[in-house]
Amino acid sequence: MAVKWVNQGMTQQEAAKRLEVTQGAVSQWVARARQGGE
View 1 (cartoon, helix red, strand yellow):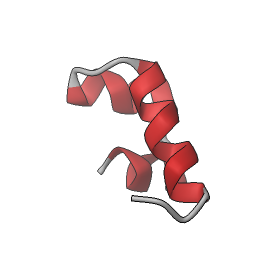
View 2 (cartoon, helix red, strand yellow):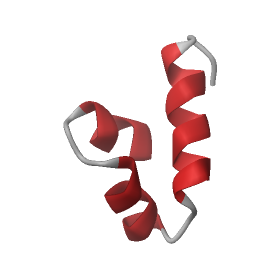
View 3 (cartoon, rainbow, N blue to C red):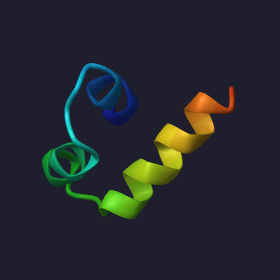
């Protein structure tokens, strides 16, 4: 979900806040998704 939100224009920090995780976690998820990973 966080990756979808970020791709739609939400900041990583806002996505992290909504999911109650760190911005670093969201950053890793986005990076993996952009590399074609899980």
